[in-house]
Image (cartoon, rainbow, N blue to C red):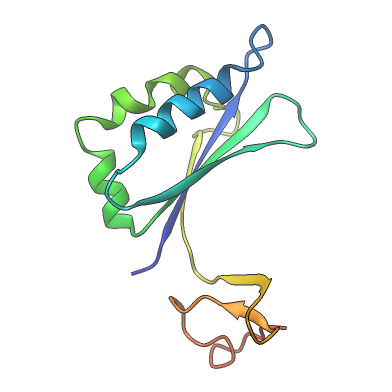
Length: 128
């Protein structure tokens, strides 16, 4: 089972540039301990001020979908809903992790390979 990443695109209102960060922190606090949620990050655009992406990482698609259809999903995420960026259609993207590398050196000084995926050499990929 592969991990899942969910991306939510958001735009801060011009009259309240801190709204996204406040909503993100409120939601993140409420989501602590959610089964299957491995973590989340708030990414701020370096080229478009006021644009953000919230990226959450889930242990599986099943874990995400169970939470998504649950009774608390809509209420918990409501603080970000007014800021969703619908300029490209859907404000969401749901992606399964197909491959993963860590470029932080492992104990042996080599690039670390995520053990959740097949050996990169056997997949025709190189680690360095």
